Image 1 (tube, one colour):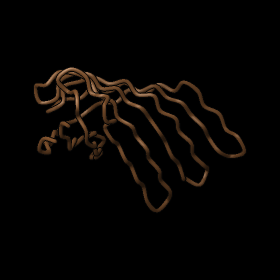
Image 2 (tube, helix red, strand yellow):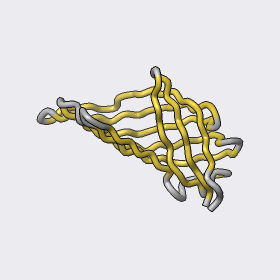
Image 3 (cartoon, rainbow, N blue to C red):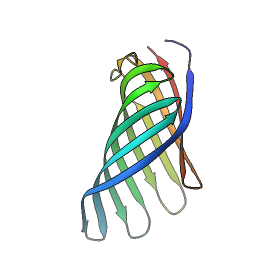
Image 4 (spheres, one colour):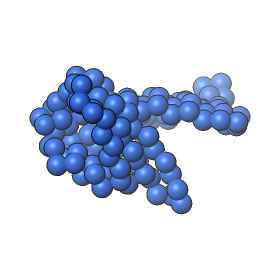
Length: 131
């Protein structure tokens, strides 16, 4: 395993609802999302996301994201899994690189991504290494 690397930058999000329905006060949704990354990751991505939420503000989502581009000059693609939950008191988000799903010069990539939103700007930090 190589040493841990850090990549940082920003990204923009374009969300398109595919389907939404409400069953007994619980809302279910499916979205297709496109992202453009800038900074250490110059890439685009496509995301499929499923959501669930209650009228009291509790919610969760799961998503699979395919990213293609250049990470600090290395060309290829990799896949992320997202799992997020929230209620009125807290929120938790885990975004991990799927081991074994890197291609090209990003083959063998492993790690995690964190997201911070400040003044409506999306910031990412990727901690990664190569196996």
